[in-house]
Structures are given as C-alpha cells and as structure tokens.
Amino acid sequence: NIVLLGLSRINILEEIPSEKMYRIAKAELISEGQEDGDFDLSSIQTLLAQVIVQNPKLSGSLEVLLQEDLSADKVLDILAHLLVQETYQRQKFMEKFSLKERASLIEGVLAELLMRGNSITE
View 1 (tube, rainbow, N blue to C red):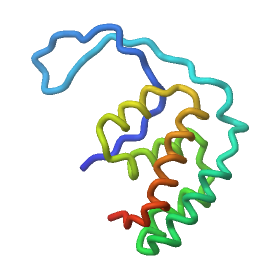
View 2 (cartoon, helix red, strand yellow):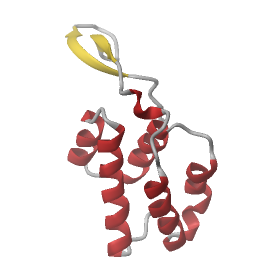
View 3 (cartoon, one colour):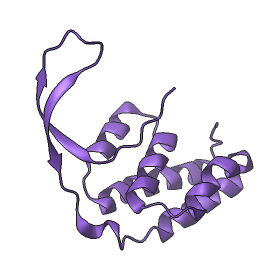
C-alpha cells in the first residue's frame, strides 16, 4: 500500500480524457478555514490515549500523533486513514472542510471503538 498525505484540498471541475494509466482533471484549489493554527485537539488526544491504553500494540504507531508537532488537519487526516474503514464514512470525512466537523467525525470513531472495546489491528 502507498499512503499519500495531501497538501491541499481541491474541487474537481472536470475530468480530462487521457490514455494514461492515471486520471487527469481540471481543478481549483479550495482555501481551507483559518482555524488550523489555533484548533484544539485535546479531546481527540484524550480519546486517542485511551485507545492506545486499550490496544497497547498500537502505541508505536499512534503515540507519535500525541507527541509530534503536526498540524490539526494532518493529525485528523492520519487518524481518518488509520481508523475509518467504511467507504461511506471515509467519503463523508473527506467532504468536510471544517476542522471542527472532521474532528467531530474522528471523535465519534474513537468513542465508538472505546465503547465497544474493539481491538484495532495494525
């Protein structure tokens, strides 16, 4: 598997026909809200710490998200990649532009994992 970390969000205006092995599109850059700098991830970090306690074998891959100096949007995107399995839920996450809305979805996933006591596989 290849994991890509996006730099920005775009709105696809049209797909351009191509003989290449990948898709080409005309797009416009979407400016995200300016809430990135002061967005508080403390509730996400608390839930994440509880998930790590419940699933100790994940500590190596998830603890980095508690300690690294990553922006809120990157932390949320990484968590969505790792934890959101259902296609519909992934699409719903990707469609959200607001950090608050994305954080709410991730909080729900983390809380559900904790309530069910599910073990997450690496």
